[in-house]
Amino acid sequence: MSQVALSASTNREIGSRPVRRLRAEGLIPGVVYGEGVTPLPVSVNAKEFRTAVSGEQGLNTLITLEADGTSYTVMAREIQRHPFRNTVSHVDFQVVDPNKGVTVEVPLHLIGDAVEVRHADYEVDQQAFALLVTARPDQIPTHVDVDISDLTVGGSIKVGDVILPEGVVAAGDHGLPVVATRAGRAAKTATAQA
Image: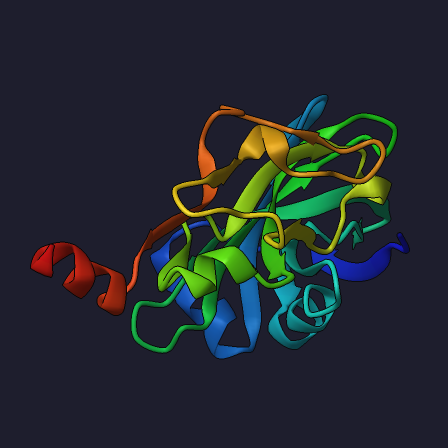
C-alpha cells in the first residue's frame, strides 16, 4: 500500500468563529492524536483531503501528514460532516505505527450465486455490509469477498466463516451472521396456503 502525502497547518485558532472562518476558506479543522503524541490541532485543505481519501483504500488510506516541519503517519478516523451540505466539518487523524495492527472497517462484497436458495424461492439476506478487521496498515484489504455459492436454505455465513487475506484477522464476535436466508414472496405464500 502506498502512502498519500497531505500538508497541514498547526497555527489554527480554537473556537467557533475561527473554525467557521477556516471552513469558509476551504479548510477542514482537525486534530492529530495517538500514542506518544500530544493532541495537536491542525487544519487541512478540503480538496486535498478529499483527494487523499478518495482512492481504493478510502478512509483506511495511510497518510503522511506534514504539519509545519513534522511528519506523522496517520489514518483518518473520526470524520464529522455538516448535517445538510454533507461536507466534512472536522477530521481526527490517528497516529499509527506501520508495523503494528490497527482495527478498521472493510466493506463486504457478496460474490457467486446461491442457486439452491434461489430455486427454493428464498432470498439472500446480507446482514452486514462491513467487517471489523485488525491488520497492519499495509495489509488492509480494500474489500472482503464473501462467496455465497454454497449457501443453503436456512443457512448462514458468520464472521468466523469469512475467508480473509493473510495477515488480516476478524475483530469482534465471530458468531455474528454476515449473510442469512429468508423466505421470498412465493415461499411465504406457499407456506401460508399449506
